[in-house]
Image: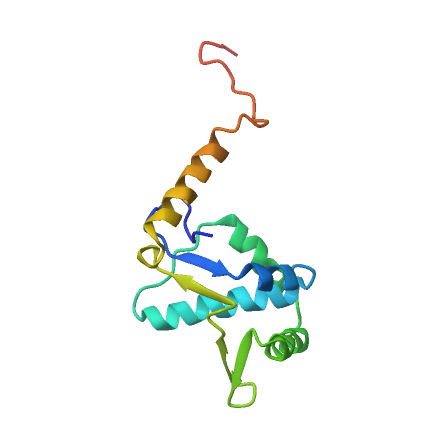
Length: 141
């Protein structure tokens, strides 16, 4: 998912579908994996901060804000046990397995994938679902 859905050049958070399915019932582990992936991308990018404007990413990160340090440490340990994260320096440094999750530049995605993604976004936006009613412009109060 794009970090900023309104910007086509925004980096993309890619989580392997099997990893996502495995962690879907473990929201604290999923939040830690997303947080580590974003932090690792920030460190790799150097001077450039990540602009995160996607509310879905915020929803994935939300459980991390309500966990104690012990619960987060346990989530890190469970991610290491699953093989999604590598532990360096005995709990002081972590690295996300790039097969599980990573932040990609849009240039790393194939043109065919980006075309399919953009067409899916257009279909989603045009999908006549329930919308908020609009007040007519000529309506006076």
